[in-house]
Image (cartoon, rainbow, N blue to C red):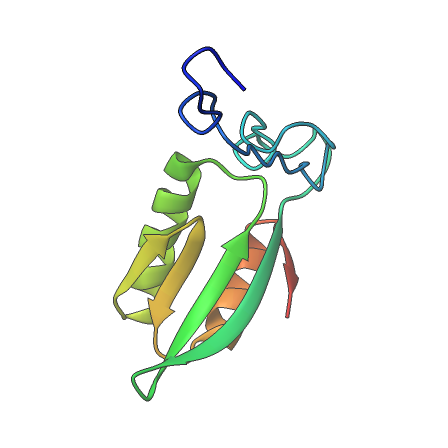
Length: 115
């Protein structure tokens, strides 16, 4: 018991700290996702198709790229596909089914494309 007679009034409560899957450090302070790829290594991009309100969306999840690079890459993809798109949570979303076109463009730029 504390001086005022209640244990609930003080303290920060429960704090759950999760570890980063890459470096094993505190995930709240980790910047593994924002750092660029290691020198000599090629960034990896995973492609997948999703349906949103019955319409196809091509999603490219890139690891190891900063926001400025993702924004410029999205602009190139939208122009090449002739479609709209957005950047959400570090993933490039292009409206429509453009996996083949996105795969060829990204592999031509030197990215490792999976999916």
